[in-house]
Length: 77
Image 1 (tube, rainbow, N blue to C red):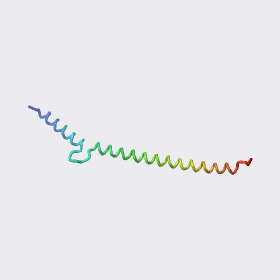
Image 2 (tube, rainbow, N blue to C red):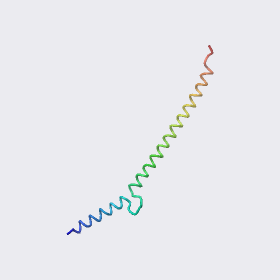
Image 3 (cartoon, rainbow, N blue to C red):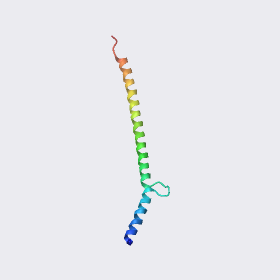
Image 4 (cartoon, rainbow, N blue to C red):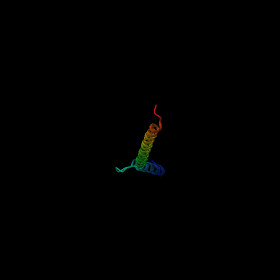
């Protein structure tokens, strides 16, 4: 014969399992947190790539300008 505490513990465990898995086709708390973290990481990666590309463009532009200036100031042989 199960005790009252055992039945309550079992109901609590079932409730916790349903909450964690989402139950009723709803997204679980953990799934939402994982999705949120992945979106945040994706945004951060896009920002990092854009920043890197911008630095690369600026560096390339500066190199072209300095090369043009060097050609002008370079003495002819």
